[in-house]
Image (cartoon, rainbow, N blue to C red; front, side, top):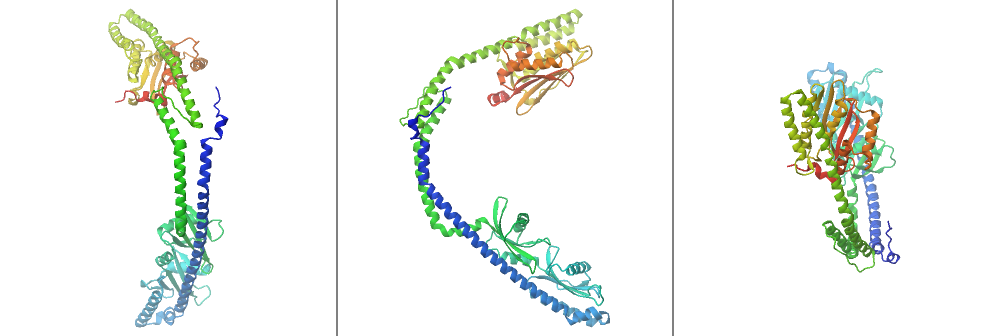
Length: 590
């Protein structure tokens, strides 16, 4: 075949070269300028926001540290209260009035301290010596041993000023007992209000979309400003492992965040601020003028490029597409005329030559081959009938010899129905339901003869396979072959099974027996002969059926023999539903 070459005098006039030069000359400088300005602005905005955020986080931690220091001072002052010493040391010697006054004084002191700071949720004074716990919120109640033991263990460990317990922050101080190793007689615990801490975290959020949280990675403590931030916080912990520096980028669920972190060693706490990337881009609004200039320049470039592309490429290409659509509709007399000396002129010339050659092929080759295929199909179909006619008369002769008139009457009725199917006028293809009914009629005929020697399992045809169009006589000859070459010669009981399978790609009719009429070598030879499709071979019944199915459905369809699980021959009749014969699968469905 001749290679298609573009003439040398067309290379300097190529549409591609003109479009590339025009595009680069008009659009590329503007695009590069816009990209540079955008990246420069975005980088500066991100760095400036990170600096401001880190300064704000550091200030927040300083304020929190001062608040914690003040609360610690209140704890130590409370620990030195005379009334508290009195209660813990001489409670048993006090009368009820003195006890009441001392308790009321302590409640007043606790309430006063609680009211002095918004961060305090409650203050507890655990007095082990009298078995009581005094709370600003809950008054006096039985000694809270669980809180006492947890706080004492944490204070003895001395790991941090802030104690992380049950998702909250606590401050604690105690007065040791009189003897070495004795448990503290008095322990003061301040529980910080997590809701107030969340509110303080929300106050440092610069934008509505931003979020923040307190973190102690060693203690496993985390407190987020809101539920959305709490979800993001888990991803941050995974992304921050091994990361260096106080700023990083986090991507989660298709959204990017800028993350800044400040740490205080005094409280062993970190505060982390999250800011969505779109919020970082907001400072770019300062460059509105540049954006408008860029948009105007880009619009002009797009208009120029669109008009040029339409005139040089789209309009000639549209003419070619419309011409192809007319060819698809069967119009082969069209011709395209083009005056420019470019690629489309070359394509149009080749298109016109293609139509001339296509008309010649249709007249001289295609129609002739189509008629030959139809003639071959008719000839293949006609080869089956004489063979079965011979077998039918043989069965009828056998029944006549036995004098069984009832079975002769039944047989002749079935035989009449059988040959009515073969000899009736109509299409070469029939619904699979009719073909299976015909094959089932044949097995009923054979059961009259071999009812004691041969058992038959003939499954029902699935509903979704009933309307598949198939060539006539593709199932019954396979069943006849099983009887003639295997089951009739079997000395013991024979068994014949016909089943069906179907999926989105193909339908299968499976015929198998338990005879030993063919060896493994014979099966392989049969496979090779069916696969070769050599016209010089003798046209047997199975090759006849295989050829007709392949002619109708294409490659991948036909007969596929193998060794059956019943130890006899298994023949799969496969009908493949390719794009070219998809209509066959659904033909006849109402």
